Length: 234
Image (cartoon, rainbow, N blue to C red; front, side, top):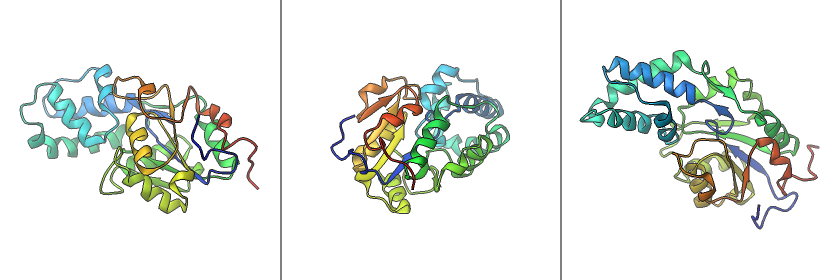
């Protein structure tokens, strides 16, 4: 962990990803996608392939899945697929997912350090809010933003910059916590320090290859981050 500004007291806020960072939602994605593809009379996608496809937004997931199973013109079928997917995902949201071990402890560490928190995900905002409520995580966050909250999604830096603005924090003093290169690239472009978990979804690529200031096997290890050591909420 080597970010030059990460001495105690430097952090003002943290932005935390959702899927693959706080909650293991792969089962939700697989179930909603299976139902959607069946409605479109297309074959299912293997669970291992779904894991490599998630992270860049639901529209990208649908396009990738349709291409994977041989649909000749995925963009043309996207409106139909998107309507079906939204319906099916709403029906099963949270039913096939679980909070990662250490996630709640990590969020408590950030809150106890006096940081303002935002959850920033490429998942549609309505699904993100519902999932956070279902898993009892919504109370940790001052702000929640989804993939449809801004004009662009991660790995574009815009969502991080907008989240910093909403939190009233400088990017250089706002820690990004995520699981993929989408989080890492967005953080670097926005000027935020970034730590990445080793257990999430990164398109089948080693997360250590993504730019980072630290790797965590559990969010409970956030207590070792230099900018949090010795800090307690007043």
